[in-house]
Image 1 (spheres, rainbow, N blue to C red):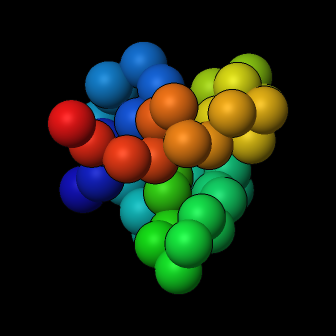
Image 2 (cartoon, rainbow, N blue to C red; image 1 turned 60 degrees about the vertical axis):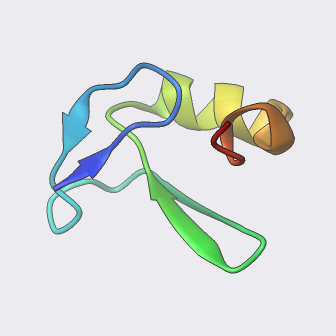
Length: 49
């Protein structure tokens, strides 16, 4: 299971159709809205602090 980097929801990588690759890492999303949010600013969500 993966964690949606936008909303924090747990996502099953095998079942979701919403993914993005950023700097070689695949991110998984619970919804199209979370994917759009991430794609709009991947550096905000794709780099854990």
